[in-house]
Length: 336
Image 1 (cartoon, one colour):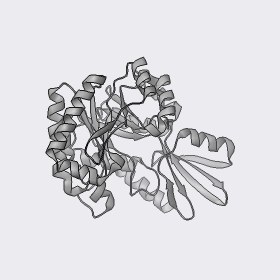
Image 2: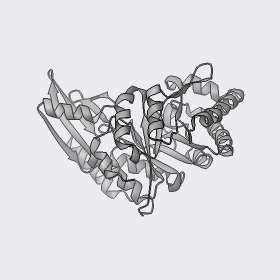
Image 3: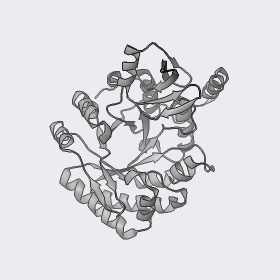
Image 4: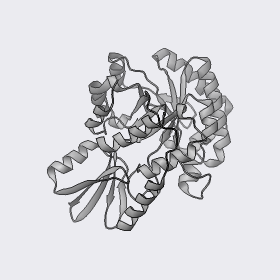
């Protein structure tokens, strides 16, 4: 284990800044998931003045290539009460590769969906839309780029913002599931050219044996996209959840969890915890029913380090997943 920490630390130290360093104002986008709506809404009520864009994951494309969904009654009330700027996500239902492939092969279905997006945004006063299409085959890259370009033109014509949530990578090609079915479909340059901004998922590192979003991974992704996505169009993804592992054997068992859970474990269980400076992430270890667990989690300190990257590199802003999971202390790092 010590050997791996040393390697990561050495690589991180040798990593250079990827964009010119200057502080500026930045845009704060927060995602909301239906699975976390209750705690997410409570977070909105307490911190709404520090949320520039609310991006709820509430619309999806079905197998019949039609759009379904929309905000719940409770969410609509909160949006109205706090006059929030809303940019909903549109996803392929269940992140089905079949659904997105069929949509990309059907120009007529695309046209109907784009028309729906315009009408729905006008009727509900959305500022725009974000595509959250995932599990796309890399073979559909050109088709996806063309769909993004067509959508961008129509939304711009109707004075609506348009963005894409893009799965991150650090190579042009690799024979892995992460590339072939997730990150390989995103032509970052073409997508950036066709949108107002790109929410780059600098988290969920599938090759990680530790955190979801180490500083080494974040900087590696940013280095890869530096000549593909302008800083003015880059909204850097920041996770506010934890990843959980069993230690023996070392297997990831949880790919998302709340800071409230971390607080609960600390209060009720004998545990040890710390912060790995080279990775920029906190950790906690505890035993339960003859099994030892290790949680890598995001807190105020790790959030602040990633926020510094956004500020120092003149990025458009950040996109944080997901409201309700965060350490409440992160809000003190933000100002309106």
